[in-house]
Image 1 (cartoon, helix red, strand yellow):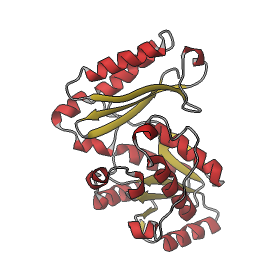
Image 2 (cartoon, rainbow, N blue to C red; image 1 turned 45 degrees about the vertical axis):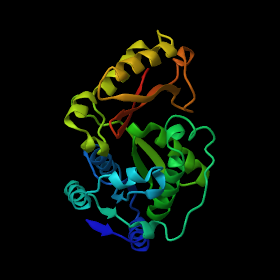
Image 3 (tube, one colour; image 1 turned 180 degrees about the horizontal axis):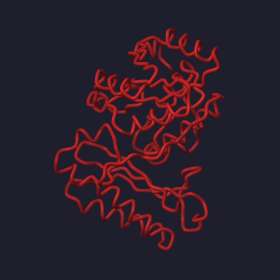
Image 4 (cartoon, helix red, strand yellow; image 1 turned 30 degrees about the vertical axis):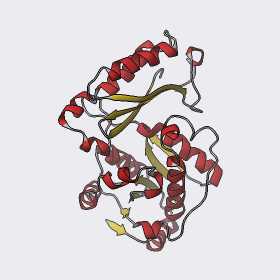
Length: 281
């Protein structure tokens, strides 16, 4: 497995492969890899001739310095896992390599980056869009793979690709869960034993919402989910919203014939967990 720390050497390697007619899949990550990341990489390996994974904790998508400091890092273990599954190359630059100069661009995503996560994490999605745009320019992928757990992020990236004209297919992959339903996340490692026992309640609440939709008014569903989450001594709801998948605007029973998502963010102590579930697919 090739490990690249510099943009130029990675891009040269990519172009050599493309000159031989090879199709390239790309999986961007921030490391602390779990089975969900490996599922993305595994799918990329099945669908492409070459696969590149990136490991870079992107500082400009954190709106709180303490969250950046606490983000788990396990580079050596991550590299071993990727080598074990047959990944062809890994790009793990430092911040200076990714941002030799300040990138002051501001993307206009309309309402997409103002709702849900955007309401609570100012500037987060702009930082995500900048780093993914830069990574796409370096890796020039034919396909790029993202988990649907970060559903709003997936829609932002699709919008950025249209805006920037990247010739890449964005592949959304289903959320990978623990046997008890908890969505896999690098943040799960920070949960206390008590929090970990209660955290599957997030998925249970989403399933309850799916059972209620569309027979029940969405306001009643939101109230029921709020009550269920906040009944746990370890969990506190930040938001639960029912939105149309295509544009993330609020959905009602009238939208039952198009894909509707229930999107949620919950605090377990100082650990923030997000999840989502299609309510009508």
